[in-house]
Length: 440
Ligand code: UDX
Image (cartoon, rainbow, N blue to C red; front, side, top):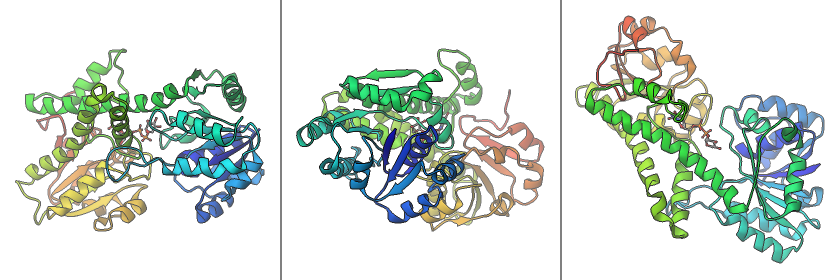
């Protein structure tokens, strides 16, 4: 089939490359000329496992091409995936739909008869219906469907090619049949397919993200209670997660969630619920957000206490800048928020990250960065573990103890082997645990 994918950010680039790999003829479209030039040369705009290889293979075969022209896209295909960003509006939590609207308006004058516009962007419920009315009025016979994506950064290619489910919201059998054809190789492989109305499809996405964010904030709220009670949140998480109704995934206590999705999506959902008269139903999302933000503050407070009440004149080594391991993304990164707060309070902070240093430098140029862990920790009074990269679990604590001034560690991700660090000469503290002892 011939498809366009409009917006070549994270979602769009991965979707375009994966659709080409399934055998479709794909035209990727973006307003950013530099990005289109590098994509045409097979270079991915983001660090993502397997994406470079997929781009190279499919641009070389000619199945995947790129352009800046929406008109060329409209002439090329009958199915158009919209993957542009829906950022948080500066005046509040609501989503800014200007890019989605601009794409639809840009396509409308050029659409072929019967074309289908498929939204993948995360949007406030009701957007598909509104765009559907607009398309119907300007280009009768053309349609809009919604098909949210659930990809995680770091495993985006895998999540797109082998999703746990496909969700397609449309009012028309024809749109549904077209999307079943697009995804046929996946359906043959047994991927569950949920056909819904457009509003339900839009809500599946924000409800899923809200549920996951709630799970994280729940365990982080328990972490606060554990600290007050002298209990151990890591053991608590393992013990409640063993109940299959609860499950252990997304129950890792620590610094909380960041990134380009969870924080903005729960705020946009709360804002939209208010607009449609359902504000009370999702009041808990404000609390989920507050708990998450509080984890960053609690980490700073705990670090300050460990240093005797002040950061002035102290050296702090920071392990991690990315919002999560396996990604070079620093958008709304809890690690960088904490590092900046400590720096602002007078500490000399040196940040290490295996992948995200360039992005961190661009986002927070005021901080100092180190190319390796020993350099980040040289002469440190305190080491903070803020992003749980596997590399940090492989560190040699004894060796690192010899480069710091005080072997004092705060594990804000509850991910390091505390016993091994203590055996290596460190005093170890962790969020959600009061003592320096860890029992397992
Ligand atoms: C998320 C959703 O998982 C994905 O389905 C959606 O399409 C986009 O948003 P992503 O932002 O890539 O994906 O990251 P994810 O792996 O879900 O982690 C989100 C955040 O939660 C990270 O900051 C992570 O460190 C944090 N997290 C995750 C925890 O703090 N504890 C956990 O137990 C799990």
